[in-house]
Length: 148
Length: 115
Image (cartoon, rainbow over all chains, first blue to last red; front, side):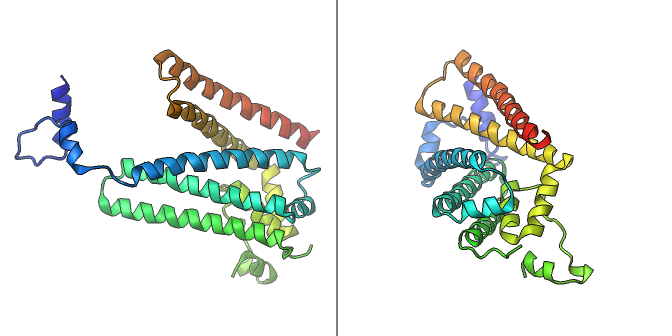
């Protein structure tokens, strides 16, 4: 039973002419690890923890504001104690998004060309989103917001 | 260049359209606050419109559900909860808790919005 399942899995990678054969740990081991896998896994957890803490801080901060009017929000973000965690929140969240989307691509996109395309697109989109958010935070924090 | 320049240009051709209004809500909120009172009004207009609320409820539910599932996986990463019935119980619990927390959040928000 196990042999049949393994043979079915192996036939995907073996050339059609070869007879399907079982693959086990002995076949996988010589390839070694993907090297970056553990780092990616760890970063995903750390960014998740950072984002979790910062989102809780963010939610509590919003609840404590007297209103969500623009002047109130702008004054709140003019404090470094609000602006710096907001920047960290943006960084942690977009980094976590990038890592998570990358996993989807790694696991479900098998064509190398498509994989490269989506990897680059995700990277660009995450950096773009984070940059725009950071710019907005800094603009408010550094008192450069247009009056009115 | 940026939206701020579009706002200063009186010609209708360059009149700014609300873009990305359905995505990255917090980023749009930050951008609108930094951009000025007009932009902020556009944001709050959409955020309090029924269609904006529908989108925001969906986004907040997705974030809460993802967070709860993430916490469940933190427990699994530590090595706890692999027993089949325990695993199933917490899997169902996160689904239930996600809906309950989202409902509680929006009950609280809408109470303030419409009172």
